[in-house]
Image (cartoon, rainbow, N blue to C red; front, side, top):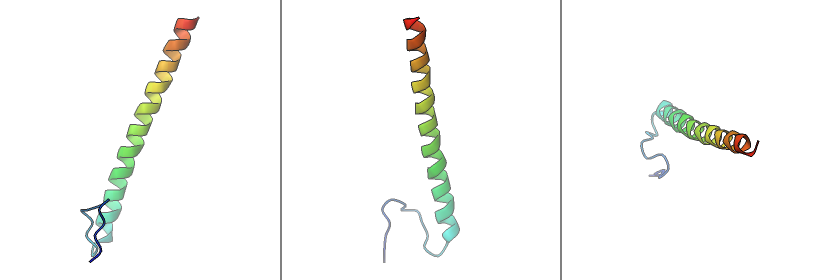
Length: 52
């Protein structure tokens, strides 16, 4: 039987579980990316405020 190590909870008989898991992981990755981007933008604005 093929076992996916990246998504261990996937039930091959239930494609919906795979979709839900993918959606959860996708939103988590997107949120982390947005948080990092916002933090970098804030750091840049603080640096530009110091430079002025």
